[in-house]
Structure formats: C-alpha cells, structure tokens
Length: 80
Image (cartoon, rainbow, N blue to C red; front, side, top):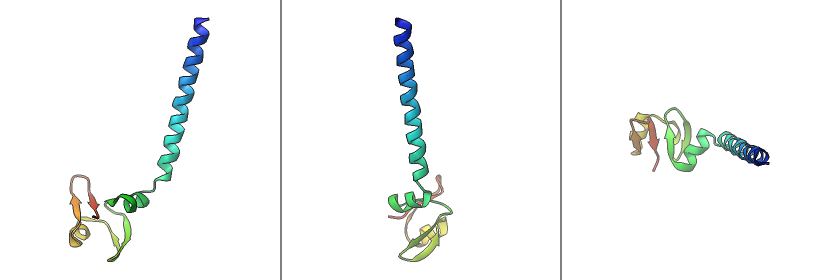
C-alpha cells in the first residue's frame, strides 16, 4: 500500500512539474524582445524602436545622444 501512495505522489509531482514547465514555455514565447523593451524601457543593443525622435536602433551612441542611460556591462539602454 505504501508503494502505491508513493507512486501516486510521484506521479502528481511529475505532472505539476510538467505543467509548470509548459506554462513557462508558453509565457516565454509570448514575450517578444521588442514588446519587452517598449513595456519596461529596458532595451538591449540592436533593437529598432519607434520613439518621439523617430525610428532608431538601440546602441551606445543613440542612447547617449538622447540622454538615456547606457548600461555598458549589459549592452542595454534604459529609455527613461
């Protein structure tokens, strides 16, 4: 009887881990880098975005040109 309870618990835990993994995969595919950039104002280098200054590509030169904060270690720009 103990073996059956253990097997059922193991099966349930495995099922919930699989379900959590599936949810994380679907959430990950739902987050586009461009949308994340526009939502959080944290943009990685190389992304093209539309701003009040027109369409620009995020890089160190443009980030500093428009008085945004450049993160050298992460190669990203904060647009606030």
